[in-house]
Image 1 (cartoon, rainbow, N blue to C red):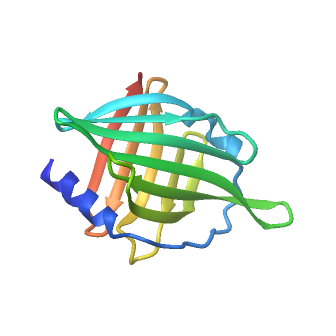
Image 2 (image 1 turned 90 degrees about the vertical axis):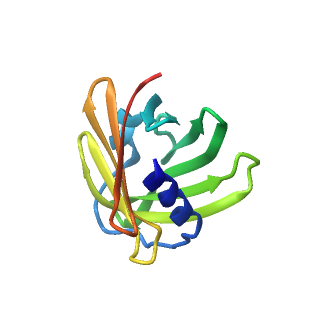
Length: 161
């Protein structure tokens, strides 16, 4: 729990503008992420609600809460980016807010790897989050992994709400 809070503090300071990498991908290949998901990270509850891919993008609202109330709200948008004729990649844009909707952090990440049930994004070395990955490990389970600048890995398994 202490490490997760440390990661959130680190995230508050991050701000990058990563350029898309040349990995051919389209937003429809992430349709397996769509839906409402919920899981526990220690005593904290993580909730993510991913919209289906449409018109070149998809998004999620993430709520991190504890018995004391909402700790953080995060908005992530993944969008298709044209690199060259017939060659697209994906870019991830993350914005983190306090419970009062004050902007705490912003970070942009580039596609690192994509497969039929997995996607990962990376940012440059100065970013508070180095890598963010999503993997559909079962029909009813979505694994989210966050690697922070210190190299610590935080993982949560989410199930449909």
